[in-house]
Length: 408
Image (cartoon, rainbow, N blue to C red):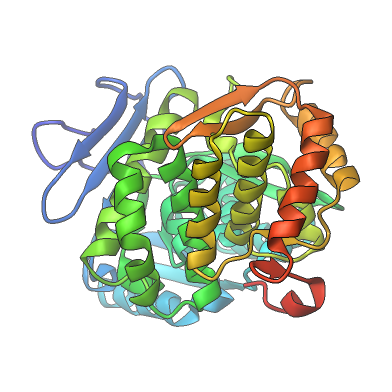
C-alpha cells in the first residue's frame, strides 16, 4: 500500500489499494508548506485519509491519479466546477461518468439516495472512485452512497462551499434525513482524499459564505487563544473577500486543524460528550422547519447557548456580548421566531435520545472553554430564550417569510 509518510509528502492510497491495513502512528499529522496537508490516522478504527490543499485543483492530477474509472456526483450549485473536473479527467484519459444532484438539505433523502445508487450501479465496477463535488449536504449524501455501493467504493471529496470546506467535507460522517428527523440514518465512512481549493468558494452567495464562517466561529469559541484572536481580526475580511486572500487561508487552516484534533480520537462517536456538538441543539428546527442553512442555524444556536450560559452564571456577560456581537457583525441573525421555550425543550428531549439518554449539551464557559452538561436547567433555558428574543427583535433576527426560498 502507498501509505502515509511523516518524512515526505503524504501519499494518498489509490483506489486499487482501498481497504489495506492502516499503519503508522495514530493522530493528525500535519505537513506545512506552500499548501497544508493533514493525514488523519486511527488504526483501531482502520481509518486513514488525507485532506490536502490543492490550489488550482482542476489543473492538477491529484484526483485523476486516484483511479482510472471515476463517478462524479455534482452539486447543482457547483455544475461548472464539476464540468471542469470532467474535462481534466477526459484530458488524462480517465473514464468518467457525471451525475447531478440538487444541493441543499432536501437532497439528503432516501429517494435521492436510491436514485443515485441505481444510476451509478449501471456503470460501476468494484474499486471505481466516487467523487463528490459540492456543498455539505451533497457530501453527506455521496458519502452514504459510496459506503453502500458494492459494500464500499473508494471516495474523494471536493468541497465547493465554505461549510463543506471546514466541516462537512473533512470528517467521516455521512447522513440522510427521514421525515422530520435530521441525520437519523447514516454511516461513518472515510474518503481517500479531500481536495481543498479556496477558489471554488469564491462564487458562493454571501449567505453561504456567512454560514461557513459560523462553523469557523464555533471552533474559534471552543479553542479560544490565538484562534479566537485571529477570528476577531480576520472574519470580516474573509467575508468581504469571499474567502479569497491570506486571511481565509489562516482561518480555514486553524478551523480544520482544530476540528480534526477533536474528531480523530472519536471518529465513530463512541464518546457522546463532544464539544464539537456545540451549536447543534436546534439544527432540526432551524434547518428542516425554518429552512436555514446549516451554518446560519449553528450561529443562532451559539447565540442561545451563550445566553443560557450567562443566565446560569457560567459565562461572563462580557463574553456573551462578544459572541453575539461577532455574529451580528457579519450580518448573521442571533434569533429566529420559531424558537420558543417549548420548542427548545422538545429539542433537548430529541437530542437526549440521540446522545445516549442524556442531553450531553456543550455550553460555553468562556472564550476557549466548553463544558458538556448531562442535563439542562429548564428554568434557565426558558429565561435565556426570553432574553435572546428581546435582544434579537429589531436586529439580528430572521422570520420565516424573510428567509423563504433562500436555502442553498
